[in-house]
Each structure stands twice: as structure tokens, then as C-alpha cells.
Length: 168
Image (cartoon, rainbow, N blue to C red):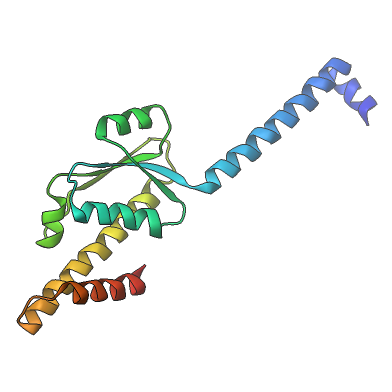
């Protein structure tokens, strides 16, 4: 078999080069598959610094298989994206917490590399976690409206636990 390869390729040196390139290519392909299977790394720039934005980041960190969050300021996050250290940047803009509480349009942005295959999936995960968080606040507001009083701390926590158990 090696004799036939020599005839086709032009000698022993060519056979060694072909075999070496096959081994290197196999190694690099395997390494690439293993690293991409672990998780998508996303930088989170929290410009709001509210309890609600911290909850959102926490939900994504704890309840999203395949996504790793690194918390950074916006400038560091942009540098990480340019240096290909992260797949994308989640930007939580100022006013996010107030908008969750008051049930208004959320101030979230997701920027990713042009070559990112995971961008849409990450956007969907972020939107889903934000929807659960918004639902928790809506549920508290609705319960208070129906009861005609404010819920106490324990009641709010129990309601949130039920929502998180059901939807996460």
C-alpha cells in the first residue's frame, strides 16, 4: 500500500508530508469540535446595575446549558469580541430594571461576530430568560391587584419560585 502511495505521490518525503498533514488536520478538527461543544462564551455588560439586571444575568448563568457568561464593562467586552475571546456581547442598558417593573419595552442588545453560528440561539435564550423575569414581575403586580394589597417578601419569593420552577 505504501509502495503504491509512493508511486502516486513521488517519493517517501511526500508520503510523510501527506501523513503528517492528515494527523494534524484530524487533531485540529477534533479540538475544534470539543471546544465548540462546551459552551458559547458571551460577555455581559450591565450598564443598569439593578437587581433585575443581576437576576437576568444570574438566570442565564444558572439555567442556560451551553452559554457561559463573563461579566465585563462595555469597553472590555468590545475588546474581547474583537480578540475573538467571546462569541457575543449582551448589553443591558440603563433603565432595564425600571422597565421590567413597569412592564415596558426592555433595553437589551446582543452583538455578535459576523461568523457566529450561535448568535440567533443565544438571542433566543436571552429573550426567553428576560420573558420569564418579566412574567415574575407581572405575576406579582397582578396578585397585588387582585388581592388589593402589597405582597410581603415571603409571598413574592414563593410566587417567583413557582414561576421559575415551571418555566426554567
